[in-house]
Every structure is written in C-alpha cells, then in structure tokens.
Amino acid sequence: MLADLILLVHFALAAFIVLGLPLVWLGAWRGWNWTRNRAWRYAHAAAIVVVAAEALAGSVCPLTRWEDALRAEADARSFVGRWIAQLLYYDFPEWAFTLAYVVYALATLASLRLIAPRAPSRAGR
Image (tube, rainbow, N blue to C red; front, side, top):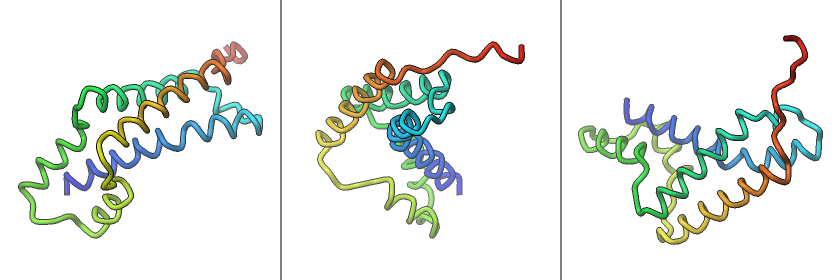
C-alpha cells in the first residue's frame, strides 16, 4: 500500500511537471493570473530542472527507487496502482527520456523569461 501511495505522489508530480508548461502558455493567452504566480512558476521550473539533471547524470528518480524497493517486498500492485503505473511508465530508450526532459526544462526556463512570473501583489497588506 505504501508503494501505491508513492506511485500516486510520483504521478501527481509528473502531472504537475507535464501540465504546468501548457497551463502557463494557456494562462498567458487567457489572462489567468494564477499561472504567473512566482512561487508556482519557480516550483515548476525547479521540478523539471531536477528531473532533467537526474536524467543527464544517469540517476534513477528517488521516488522510482523507493517504490521499486517496496514492491520487491510486496506481491503485486493494486488495481489503481497498475493503472497509474501504465500512465506513468513507458518502454522507451533512456536517451529519449533524457532528451525530452532536457527540451522540456529548456522550454520551461525560456517561458520564465517570455511569460515572466509576477511579484506578489502589495494590495491588502
């Protein structure tokens, strides 16, 4: 059960990373202020930069390592765990993932310049 919980957290983090950049672009077009929130934008950029750095270093994600260690002790994934794993894990060469992570990190960093996050408002203080 703990392995499934880690898998769920891993999936949520991956969704945050994958959906974050398109939401920033859509938010800039639609005028959504929350997509320019400085803390959210820097957290998103940090997350994908860490993932890209891990891939370039040839390191396995700590969440994957932790889940795998717990799975070795358990018999199988739960029903939900199997579905989330199918959404999260793909059978592609490592270089393809590394390239995708680095390109996505560069696009995210470029978006920090092109669609700049805003400083917190002083209104209401």
